[in-house]
Image 1 (cartoon, helix red, strand yellow):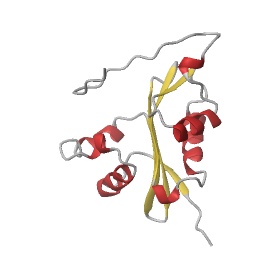
Image 2 (cartoon, rainbow, N blue to C red; image 1 turned 120 degrees about the vertical axis):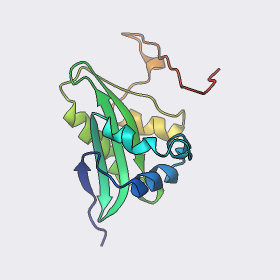
Image 3 (cartoon, rainbow, N blue to C red; image 1 turned 90 degrees about the vertical axis):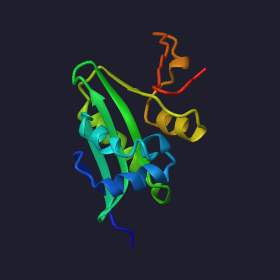
Image 4 (tube, rainbow, N blue to C red; image 1 turned 90 degrees about the horizontal axis):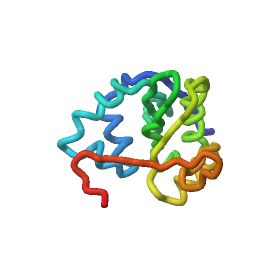
Length: 148
């Protein structure tokens, strides 16, 4: 019988568990040796952090930034590969959306992968390139990375 996955809020997550989770999904921008010390600080400065736990094992996390009025940026949604496709990511996103239900706009930037697109589509997100009623453009700058 599978144990239930518990959700917890707050950024107080052991460093080694954070690194393991981010490494497991290949997010090296967070875990490269020069960036590792910044990971806990990124969580501490987030407006909202929700994590998923199987006992004492960190199996998922979502975090975001918000002014708590007009915009909420859903920054990270990640689930250990062995725990994916069990509804954990959906629960994490719903926890974030519930916390910021009163905020006008939720924005996220995701990798251009079919699986990610299908996941966010299923949660009611709309890609900006598909907007008709209110066309928007997405702009981005990433420190130290040439994008074009």
